[in-house]
Figure 1 (spheres, rainbow, N blue to C red):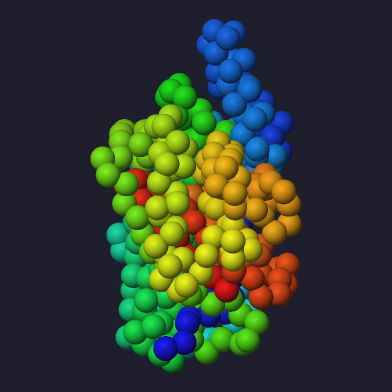
Figure 2 (tube, rainbow, N blue to C red; figure 1 turned 120 degrees about the vertical axis):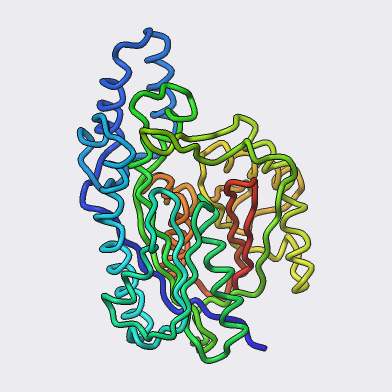
Length: 357
Protein backbone atom coordinates (compact mmCIF):
# COMPACT_ATOMS: atom_id res chain seq x y z
CA UNK A 1 0.00 0.00 0.00
CA UNK A 2 1.28 3.48 -0.81
CA UNK A 3 1.94 6.01 1.91
CA UNK A 4 -0.32 9.01 2.66
CA UNK A 5 0.93 12.31 1.29
CA UNK A 6 0.88 15.68 3.03
CA UNK A 7 -0.87 17.58 0.26
CA UNK A 8 -0.99 21.01 1.90
CA UNK A 9 -0.17 22.84 5.13
CA UNK A 10 -1.52 26.28 6.03
CA UNK A 11 -0.83 28.41 9.09
CA UNK A 12 -2.74 31.29 10.67
CA UNK A 13 -1.82 33.69 13.48
CA UNK A 14 -4.00 36.25 15.29
CA UNK A 15 -3.75 39.97 14.60
CA UNK A 16 -1.83 41.07 17.69
CA UNK A 17 1.94 40.82 17.12
CA UNK A 18 4.37 41.41 19.98
CA UNK A 19 8.13 41.75 20.28
CA UNK A 20 10.06 40.32 23.20
CA UNK A 21 10.33 43.82 24.61
CA UNK A 22 6.55 44.30 24.45
CA UNK A 23 5.93 41.11 26.41
CA UNK A 24 8.76 41.76 28.83
CA UNK A 25 7.38 45.17 29.76
CA UNK A 26 4.01 43.64 30.59
CA UNK A 27 5.66 40.86 32.57
CA UNK A 28 7.78 43.33 34.53
CA UNK A 29 4.69 45.32 35.46
CA UNK A 30 2.99 42.08 36.48
CA UNK A 31 5.76 41.12 38.94
CA UNK A 32 6.62 44.67 40.03
CA UNK A 33 5.52 43.98 43.61
CA UNK A 34 7.87 41.00 43.97
CA UNK A 35 11.38 40.99 45.46
CA UNK A 36 14.18 42.41 43.31
CA UNK A 37 15.89 39.01 42.91
CA UNK A 38 12.59 37.47 41.79
CA UNK A 39 12.04 40.23 39.22
CA UNK A 40 15.58 39.79 37.91
CA UNK A 41 15.08 36.04 37.46
CA UNK A 42 11.81 36.63 35.60
CA UNK A 43 13.61 38.95 33.19
CA UNK A 44 16.37 36.39 32.60
CA UNK A 45 13.79 33.69 31.84
CA UNK A 46 12.04 35.85 29.25
CA UNK A 47 15.27 37.00 27.62
CA UNK A 48 16.71 33.48 27.43
CA UNK A 49 13.53 31.74 26.26
CA UNK A 50 14.47 32.04 22.59
CA UNK A 51 11.19 33.79 21.66
CA UNK A 52 11.68 37.12 19.87
CA UNK A 53 8.13 37.48 18.56
CA UNK A 54 4.71 35.99 19.15
CA UNK A 55 1.05 36.54 18.26
CA UNK A 56 -1.93 36.65 20.59
CA UNK A 57 -5.69 36.71 20.22
CA UNK A 58 -6.04 39.70 22.57
CA UNK A 59 -3.93 42.79 23.34
CA UNK A 60 -1.29 42.17 26.01
CA UNK A 61 -2.88 44.59 28.46
CA UNK A 62 -6.10 42.54 28.29
CA UNK A 63 -4.31 39.21 28.64
CA UNK A 64 -2.45 40.41 31.73
CA UNK A 65 -5.63 41.76 33.34
CA UNK A 66 -7.83 39.74 35.73
CA UNK A 67 -10.08 37.22 33.92
CA UNK A 68 -12.12 34.32 35.19
CA UNK A 69 -12.15 30.88 33.61
CA UNK A 70 -15.54 31.66 32.07
CA UNK A 71 -14.26 34.91 30.56
CA UNK A 72 -11.19 33.22 29.09
CA UNK A 73 -13.22 30.37 27.67
CA UNK A 74 -15.72 32.79 26.14
CA UNK A 75 -12.80 34.42 24.29
CA UNK A 76 -11.67 30.99 23.14
CA UNK A 77 -15.14 30.08 21.85
CA UNK A 78 -15.50 33.45 20.14
CA UNK A 79 -12.34 33.13 18.05
CA UNK A 80 -11.26 29.51 17.64
CA UNK A 81 -13.77 28.45 14.98
CA UNK A 82 -13.03 31.50 12.80
CA UNK A 83 -9.30 30.80 12.85
CA UNK A 84 -9.83 27.10 12.22
CA UNK A 85 -12.08 27.89 9.26
CA UNK A 86 -9.46 30.17 7.72
CA UNK A 87 -6.71 27.56 8.14
CA UNK A 88 -8.87 24.80 6.67
CA UNK A 89 -10.01 26.84 3.66
CA UNK A 90 -6.44 27.93 2.90
CA UNK A 91 -5.19 24.34 3.06
CA UNK A 92 -7.99 23.08 0.81
CA UNK A 93 -7.14 25.77 -1.75
CA UNK A 94 -3.48 24.74 -1.68
CA UNK A 95 -4.45 21.11 -2.26
CA UNK A 96 -6.86 22.00 -5.06
CA UNK A 97 -9.80 20.52 -3.14
CA UNK A 98 -13.28 21.65 -2.20
CA UNK A 99 -14.78 21.34 1.31
CA UNK A 100 -17.10 18.61 0.04
CA UNK A 101 -14.05 16.50 -0.90
CA UNK A 102 -13.14 15.91 2.75
CA UNK A 103 -14.00 12.55 4.31
CA UNK A 104 -12.42 12.95 7.75
CA UNK A 105 -11.90 16.00 9.95
CA UNK A 106 -9.43 15.78 12.83
CA UNK A 107 -9.16 18.73 15.21
CA UNK A 108 -6.92 19.09 18.24
CA UNK A 109 -6.86 21.76 20.93
CA UNK A 110 -6.08 21.98 24.65
CA UNK A 111 -6.38 25.68 25.51
CA UNK A 112 -10.15 25.98 25.82
CA UNK A 113 -13.29 23.88 25.97
CA UNK A 114 -16.23 23.53 23.60
CA UNK A 115 -18.93 20.90 23.31
CA UNK A 116 -19.67 20.36 20.52
CA UNK A 117 -16.03 20.79 19.52
CA UNK A 118 -15.06 23.30 16.79
CA UNK A 119 -15.20 20.73 13.99
CA UNK A 120 -19.00 20.47 14.36
CA UNK A 121 -19.33 24.17 13.61
CA UNK A 122 -17.00 23.86 10.60
CA UNK A 123 -19.24 21.15 9.13
CA UNK A 124 -22.16 23.57 9.15
CA UNK A 125 -20.23 26.63 8.00
CA UNK A 126 -18.51 24.94 5.06
CA UNK A 127 -21.31 22.53 4.16
CA UNK A 128 -19.06 19.50 4.60
CA UNK A 129 -20.60 16.19 3.62
CA UNK A 130 -22.99 14.81 6.25
CA UNK A 131 -21.09 11.51 6.30
CA UNK A 132 -17.74 13.09 7.21
CA UNK A 133 -16.01 11.37 10.12
CA UNK A 134 -15.32 13.70 13.05
CA UNK A 135 -12.25 13.07 15.18
CA UNK A 136 -11.79 15.70 17.92
CA UNK A 137 -8.60 15.17 19.95
CA UNK A 138 -8.55 17.22 23.12
CA UNK A 139 -6.18 17.50 26.09
CA UNK A 140 -3.14 16.12 24.25
CA UNK A 141 -1.18 19.35 24.60
CA UNK A 142 1.93 19.87 22.52
CA UNK A 143 1.74 16.39 21.03
CA UNK A 144 -1.75 16.98 19.63
CA UNK A 145 -0.60 18.02 16.15
CA UNK A 146 1.47 14.87 15.72
CA UNK A 147 -1.32 12.69 17.08
CA UNK A 148 -3.72 14.31 14.61
CA UNK A 149 -1.35 13.55 11.74
CA UNK A 150 -1.02 9.95 12.94
CA UNK A 151 -4.78 9.43 13.09
CA UNK A 152 -5.25 11.04 9.68
CA UNK A 153 -2.46 8.86 8.29
CA UNK A 154 -4.14 5.73 9.64
CA UNK A 155 -7.48 6.85 8.24
CA UNK A 156 -6.03 7.40 4.76
CA UNK A 157 -4.35 3.99 4.84
CA UNK A 158 -7.64 2.38 5.80
CA UNK A 159 -9.71 4.30 3.23
CA UNK A 160 -7.75 4.75 -0.03
CA UNK A 161 -9.21 7.56 -2.11
CA UNK A 162 -10.37 9.53 0.92
CA UNK A 163 -9.01 12.87 2.13
CA UNK A 164 -8.43 13.88 5.75
CA UNK A 165 -7.84 17.31 7.26
CA UNK A 166 -5.95 17.90 10.50
CA UNK A 167 -6.51 21.20 12.33
CA UNK A 168 -4.42 22.20 15.35
CA UNK A 169 -5.90 25.30 16.97
CA UNK A 170 -4.39 26.81 20.10
CA UNK A 171 -4.84 30.11 21.94
CA UNK A 172 -2.20 29.44 24.58
CA UNK A 173 -2.12 33.08 25.73
CA UNK A 174 -5.53 32.52 27.34
CA UNK A 175 -3.96 30.07 29.79
CA UNK A 176 -1.98 32.84 31.53
CA UNK A 177 -2.63 32.91 35.29
CA UNK A 178 -2.37 36.40 36.74
CA UNK A 179 -2.23 35.33 40.40
CA UNK A 180 0.14 32.40 39.88
CA UNK A 181 3.80 33.29 40.47
CA UNK A 182 5.18 29.77 40.21
CA UNK A 183 8.07 29.22 37.84
CA UNK A 184 5.91 26.89 35.73
CA UNK A 185 3.50 29.74 34.99
CA UNK A 186 6.33 32.20 34.39
CA UNK A 187 8.17 29.87 31.99
CA UNK A 188 4.99 29.09 30.06
CA UNK A 189 4.21 32.81 29.81
CA UNK A 190 7.74 33.40 28.48
CA UNK A 191 7.42 30.87 25.65
CA UNK A 192 3.73 30.59 24.70
CA UNK A 193 2.17 32.12 21.60
CA UNK A 194 -1.09 31.61 19.68
CA UNK A 195 -1.30 29.77 16.36
CA UNK A 196 -3.64 27.71 14.21
CA UNK A 197 -2.69 25.37 11.37
CA UNK A 198 -4.20 22.79 9.03
CA UNK A 199 -2.78 19.92 7.00
CA UNK A 200 -4.52 17.92 4.27
CA UNK A 201 -3.62 14.24 3.81
CA UNK A 202 -4.46 11.78 1.05
CA UNK A 203 -2.96 8.92 -0.92
CA UNK A 204 -3.32 10.80 -4.22
CA UNK A 205 -0.23 12.98 -3.86
CA UNK A 206 2.25 14.29 -6.37
CA UNK A 207 5.78 12.95 -6.60
CA UNK A 208 7.04 16.00 -4.66
CA UNK A 209 4.52 15.87 -1.81
CA UNK A 210 6.00 14.62 1.48
CA UNK A 211 4.94 11.10 2.44
CA UNK A 212 4.37 9.77 5.95
CA UNK A 213 6.34 6.52 6.00
CA UNK A 214 5.73 5.50 9.62
CA UNK A 215 4.46 6.86 12.93
CA UNK A 216 4.25 5.84 16.54
CA UNK A 217 3.71 6.79 20.17
CA UNK A 218 5.83 6.10 23.22
CA UNK A 219 4.44 6.39 26.74
CA UNK A 220 6.86 7.22 29.55
CA UNK A 221 6.16 5.24 32.74
CA UNK A 222 5.07 7.12 35.87
CA UNK A 223 5.46 10.62 34.43
CA UNK A 224 1.92 12.00 34.53
CA UNK A 225 3.03 14.74 36.94
CA UNK A 226 5.65 16.21 34.57
CA UNK A 227 3.46 18.10 32.11
CA UNK A 228 -0.13 19.25 31.72
CA UNK A 229 -2.76 21.65 32.98
CA UNK A 230 -4.73 21.77 36.22
CA UNK A 231 -8.12 23.47 36.00
CA UNK A 232 -9.10 26.02 38.63
CA UNK A 233 -11.46 29.00 38.93
CA UNK A 234 -9.17 31.26 36.91
CA UNK A 235 -8.39 28.87 34.09
CA UNK A 236 -5.67 26.45 33.05
CA UNK A 237 -2.79 26.25 35.52
CA UNK A 238 0.47 25.02 33.98
CA UNK A 239 2.16 21.86 35.25
CA UNK A 240 5.81 21.77 34.16
CA UNK A 241 8.31 19.48 35.84
CA UNK A 242 11.92 20.61 35.94
CA UNK A 243 13.06 17.09 34.99
CA UNK A 244 11.16 17.13 31.69
CA UNK A 245 14.12 17.80 29.34
CA UNK A 246 16.23 15.11 31.01
CA UNK A 247 13.49 12.47 30.93
CA UNK A 248 12.97 13.15 27.21
CA UNK A 249 16.70 12.88 26.59
CA UNK A 250 16.92 9.59 28.52
CA UNK A 251 14.22 7.94 26.39
CA UNK A 252 14.81 9.57 23.01
CA UNK A 253 16.81 6.83 21.28
CA UNK A 254 14.43 4.14 22.54
CA UNK A 255 11.52 6.16 21.15
CA UNK A 256 12.92 6.59 17.65
CA UNK A 257 14.93 3.40 17.05
CA UNK A 258 11.96 0.98 16.66
CA UNK A 259 10.30 3.34 14.20
CA UNK A 260 13.44 3.54 12.08
CA UNK A 261 13.79 -0.24 12.11
CA UNK A 262 10.20 -0.67 10.94
CA UNK A 263 11.02 0.82 7.52
CA UNK A 264 14.73 -0.05 7.45
CA UNK A 265 16.00 3.47 8.02
CA UNK A 266 19.06 4.22 10.13
CA UNK A 267 20.03 7.17 12.33
CA UNK A 268 22.64 8.43 9.83
CA UNK A 269 20.03 8.36 7.05
CA UNK A 270 17.94 11.04 8.79
CA UNK A 271 18.52 14.35 7.01
CA UNK A 272 16.24 16.69 8.93
CA UNK A 273 15.13 16.77 12.57
CA UNK A 274 11.90 18.65 13.26
CA UNK A 275 11.61 18.62 17.05
CA UNK A 276 8.69 20.36 18.74
CA UNK A 277 10.32 23.36 20.45
CA UNK A 278 8.76 23.01 23.86
CA UNK A 279 11.70 25.08 25.06
CA UNK A 280 15.36 25.66 24.34
CA UNK A 281 16.40 23.27 27.12
CA UNK A 282 14.69 20.33 25.42
CA UNK A 283 16.33 21.17 22.10
CA UNK A 284 19.80 21.58 23.61
CA UNK A 285 19.54 18.31 25.57
CA UNK A 286 18.59 16.36 22.45
CA UNK A 287 21.28 18.07 20.40
CA UNK A 288 23.96 17.12 22.91
CA UNK A 289 22.64 13.55 23.07
CA UNK A 290 22.85 13.05 19.31
CA UNK A 291 26.31 14.60 19.16
CA UNK A 292 27.49 12.26 21.93
CA UNK A 293 26.04 9.32 20.03
CA UNK A 294 28.14 10.26 16.99
CA UNK A 295 25.17 11.03 14.77
CA UNK A 296 26.49 13.77 12.52
CA UNK A 297 24.23 16.41 11.04
CA UNK A 298 24.37 16.55 7.23
CA UNK A 299 24.72 20.34 7.19
CA UNK A 300 26.87 20.97 10.24
CA UNK A 301 29.36 19.44 12.63
CA UNK A 302 26.87 20.07 15.43
CA UNK A 303 23.13 19.76 15.61
CA UNK A 304 21.28 23.02 15.24
CA UNK A 305 17.60 21.99 14.97
CA UNK A 306 17.47 25.17 12.91
CA UNK A 307 13.82 25.06 11.89
CA UNK A 308 12.68 24.26 15.44
CA UNK A 309 14.64 27.20 16.80
CA UNK A 310 13.33 29.46 14.03
CA UNK A 311 9.69 28.64 14.73
CA UNK A 312 10.22 29.16 18.47
CA UNK A 313 11.95 32.47 17.79
CA UNK A 314 9.27 33.79 15.41
CA UNK A 315 6.09 32.41 17.02
CA UNK A 316 6.80 30.89 20.43
CA UNK A 317 5.47 27.53 21.56
CA UNK A 318 1.97 27.21 20.07
CA UNK A 319 1.30 23.85 21.68
CA UNK A 320 -0.24 21.39 19.19
CA UNK A 321 -0.06 23.79 16.22
CA UNK A 322 3.72 24.13 16.42
CA UNK A 323 4.58 20.93 14.54
CA UNK A 324 2.37 21.98 11.63
CA UNK A 325 4.18 25.32 11.52
CA UNK A 326 7.40 23.29 11.31
CA UNK A 327 6.00 21.23 8.43
CA UNK A 328 4.84 24.34 6.61
CA UNK A 329 8.28 25.90 6.96
CA UNK A 330 9.93 22.73 5.66
CA UNK A 331 7.61 22.54 2.65
CA UNK A 332 8.15 26.22 1.84
CA UNK A 333 11.86 25.59 1.40
CA UNK A 334 11.20 23.30 -1.58
CA UNK A 335 13.58 20.65 -0.30
CA UNK A 336 14.68 17.81 -2.52
CA UNK A 337 13.99 14.27 -1.30
CA UNK A 338 14.85 14.18 2.39
CA UNK A 339 14.31 11.79 5.26
CA UNK A 340 12.73 13.71 8.13
CA UNK A 341 12.02 12.89 11.77
CA UNK A 342 9.13 14.86 13.28
CA UNK A 343 8.86 14.44 17.06
CA UNK A 344 7.00 16.03 19.93
CA UNK A 345 6.16 15.45 23.58
CA UNK A 346 2.95 15.98 25.48
CA UNK A 347 1.12 15.28 28.74
CA UNK A 348 1.19 11.68 29.79
CA UNK A 349 4.19 11.85 29.35
CA UNK A 350 3.83 10.72 25.73
CA UNK A 351 6.08 11.12 22.71
CA UNK A 352 4.80 11.12 19.14
CA UNK A 353 7.08 10.53 16.15
CA UNK A 354 6.63 10.52 12.39
CA UNK A 355 9.08 9.54 9.67
CA UNK A 356 8.48 11.66 6.57
CA UNK A 357 10.11 11.45 3.16
